[in-house]
Image (cartoon, rainbow, N blue to C red; front, side, top):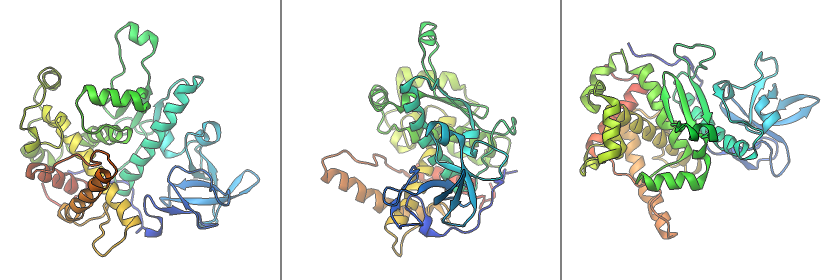
Length: 360
């Protein structure tokens, strides 16, 4: 049967909708990554239980929230490394927030470059976690449940690894998502994007994609939705390594846009699912952001839309607008994708899978 999420949240107040937040002390606009207000200099942090940003007054070693008057403490990765801005309730047994407890391996922080890259990765990871939790998906540290938990490893191509031709591969295996910290380097990431002939490559995109592999294991494999998955995406029992090797050596079929969201999605059903999953998260998050900043009668809550059709009707004119804005600025399209009918069917499957509104 379909695995249901273990987190249940009360309805959200759209005054605190992603990504539009404001300081409760002075009203200044603030952002998801901020740790202090530029106007009133109040401490800021993300309260996981409230799923919103809060301003705090400092009382000795305590943080008192202007949002709910409760007391909190910063995650140790904020206090020690400025790599996080999440807070924990003052009586929490944990020193690290939920997001940081997911980390199994981080780079050697004695190297300045590694610290900078790690902070960038953490920012992308926290945005992913926000989306997953808003969708009601389970986020469980692997350290707390090895069978179904999630963990992250942020690794670097060290001299020793390069000498052994043992390069860090970004990917997912049994609940462990590995990212090469070089992806946090804008120049290196762009180089890889060009070499692989990709239209889109971002740190957050990597997190979204790899989380798709993790949730495929949690929600599809061995469960009722597997039959519908094979009908839409294909048979995942096809030799994966052979398919990926052929993709890199031969490339995607010329007509891949007719059936897939990206060229890479065409290489194997697992990658098709992960690419489609990542794209669904992109749509859901962007729609919520658009609602926060441009709330109109036809705005859609990307995380609680009744159907993917409802999301799509709002998504298409939004992407048309942002692409034309970019072109007016002499920039390439912000959204360089085409949603064919088969891709829309797959995105609909993802929506139904997450919200469990359909019997597969």
